[in-house]
Length: 138
Length: 428
Image (cartoon, rainbow over all chains, first blue to last red; front, side, top):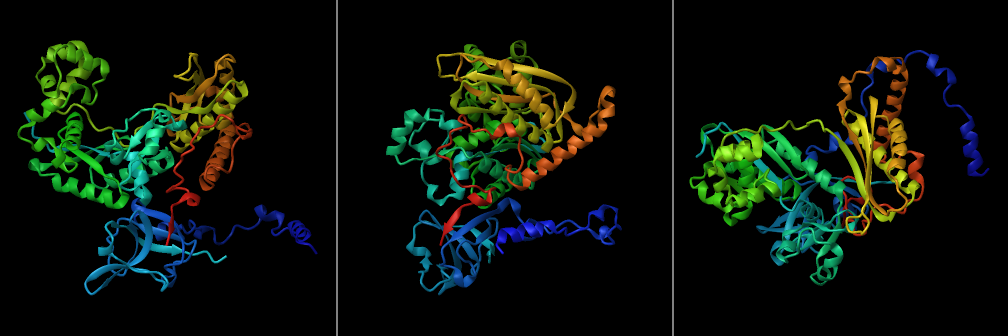
C-alpha cells in the first residue's frame, strides 16, 4: 500500500465523535493552565538575551554541536569555567573561558582545535555568556 | 542662574543608533566604517563613528557616493528596521529600570526623570546606565542631565561635544554654564526650527546665552507662549512635563516608496491595500480604532513631474476591522489615481483614533452588535495566527498578485534578533 492512500484512509477515520460539544464537561476544566512557555523558563534577562546558530564542531565535548541553537545572555559577567561568545579579530567564536597558571585563555572543547591565549591577540572581547544550547535530534 | 530642584531630567540617546545595532551583532563590522541607507537604498541615513571620521556625509544620495565608499572599504547596508526596533525596545526597557518616569521620544532617545535630593551627584547613576547599556546591548549612549527637558537636550549636546565628558554631562552641577551656553548655536536648541533661528539671527541672537538674555516681551510677541516657555526652560524653570510613556497615538501612518514607479491603478490599489492591512493590525495591537481614513500618493521629488493627491473619508462608526478599512481604501485609491504620472510613493493614514475600550457605538448600529462581535473575533484570530507565524499566515487575496513595485533593499543586513531563520550564525 502506498503511503498516500494510507494517509487518505487515516483521514476518513474520525478520531473524536461528532457529539463532543454535547458531551460531559471535562473534569479537568478547572485545572487548565497556560502552556509551558520556554521563554519564561530559559530566559531571565530578556533585554540582554540573544539567539545564535552554531556552525562547526569545536565545542562538541561541551555538548554544543553543529546547527545547535544557543542562548546567550550579555548581561552576565563571564567567570572562568563559563562557555562564552568572544570576538577574536573581528570573528565570533564560542569557547570555554579558562584559567591556567594565572593566565586567562579560551579553550576549545575538541582536541582538534587550538586554544586562544589572550596575550596572543590584540582584539579579544567577551560578547556574552552562553546559558543554553538547544539541540535537535530529529 | 540655577534653580534647585528635587527632580532631575535626563535626555538619553544612543550614538549612531542604526550603525551601532549592526555593529553590535556583527563582529565583522566592529571598528569598521559602516553606513546605513534609507528605504530603497536612496540616501545615507546613519554612519558609524569610523564612517564619520572619513567625512562621509549624512543624507547624501548613495549613487553619488557609491564609488568612494567602495574605495574606502566602507560596509554599506540597507536599513533593517526590525533589528533597530528590537534593539530600541530592549534599550527603553533597560532605561525604565533605572529611572522614575520615562518618555520615549524617538526610536533612539528618551527623556527620563530621577529624583535628586540636595543636588545629589548623578554621575555614578549615569555611568552605571551607560556601562550596562554597553554590556547588555553593545550600544553606546549619551546622557545629558539638567533641571528640565530643554536644558537636558543642551546637556546632551555638550556631552557629545566635549571630549573629556565621557558621554555624560550634568548642566545642573556646573558653575560656569554661561561659557557653555555661548557654544550652543540657536539653531541647535530643541524646538527652534529654521524659520525661528533665522529670525533670531536677524535680531543678532546667535547662541543660547544670547537667547536667555533676550527681552522676554520681544520673544513673546514673535513666538508666543511656546517661545516664552523655551526661554524659561533655558533659564532653568520647569515648564514642560514628561509625557506618559504609552501615550495614545493620534494617527497611524503606513507609507512606502516604491522600488520602481507605478502607473497602473491596480498596482496603486494593491500597495495601498497592503499598507491598510498593516495599519489595521497596528491599530488593533494598540486597542485603537479609526474614524477617518486618508490615502495619498505622489511622484518622486527628483522627477520633473509634480503630482500629489490625497483622499479622505470620515466614518460614522470607528473601526479596526481590516475588511471595512480595505473596502474604503480600495475605493479611495481610485480618487487619487492619475494615469499620466509615475507614482513613487503612497500611504494610508488612520486618523481620529480612539481607544476601543471606551468606545460607544452609535444607537443606529446597536443591533449589529452581534456582527461586530463576530468580526472582532475574526480579526483577533488573524492577528494571533500572524503573530505566531511571523506575519505570513493569513492575509487578503489582493496582496497576493505579483508585485513589481516593492521596496528595493538590495544590501539588507540579513541578521535579525527577532526571526529565528535569520539569527547570526557563529562558526566555531
